[in-house]
Image 1 (tube, rainbow, N blue to C red):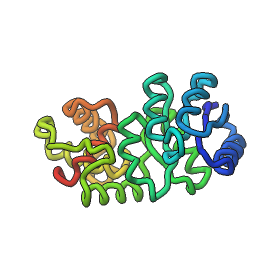
Image 2 (image 1 turned 90 degrees about the vertical axis):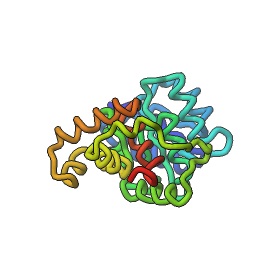
Image 3 (image 1 turned 180 degrees about the horizontal axis):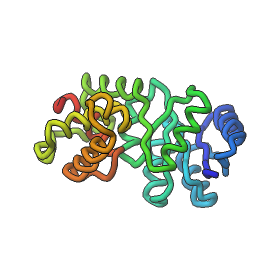
Length: 220
């Protein structure tokens, strides 16, 4: 069973979600928290494997809560819960170490599948929402922290195919979907992903997706 901590400032949301998830045999909800600071305290106490973190909360929000947990507990994965109105915070949450994000109104089955994906090392980037985030950044190519500057020199190391794969990563596509788009094998996609992560000196697939979203208006 995957140990999950649910974090949301609204009692109805956190209690309802924890109740629904507790009905699933593959998940054990070990606790609930009310904001990012409480999430860190509960995580240190209860040792969850996955933290479902609301992004917009009074007190310590989900972005800061993600940073605090990832700094203290490297093995804990954070999955952000958000709405279409919170897209401005998504990039910052991913940069602080979140393994992806979900819309709050998604079906329980989708949330469970996302938890399983993140637990096994994957990244969750809903395609429709990621496309919206990408579009907004292309209109205003700057995150809420103002950290976008010029293109990194390392971009020039990528082949044209690797740039294509990077673009699809930024749209939230998995290896199978990228393979279908580019008419290549999943194994080839996996190799391209590994190569571009190494060339760009990124940590993982999540950072590659962030890179694609952040610089996509100039690269693609």
